[in-house]
Length: 51
Image 1: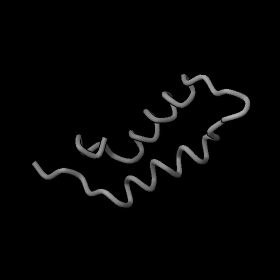
Image 2: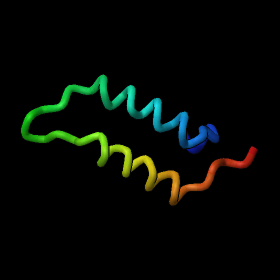
Image 3: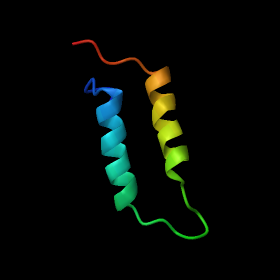
Image 4: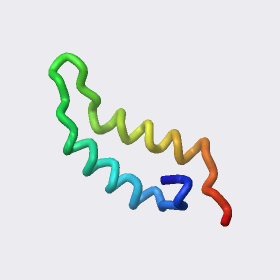
């Protein structure tokens, strides 16, 4: 998403939709808050591609 210069709000909505579509096993769940924190970390550490 950073490669395509996607805004954070759009990336968050897309990731939330994918997160909801993923099957979560009982013993190895990834809470939405943790998934969102991973996305925020990517947006904090990587700059968009300049075209």
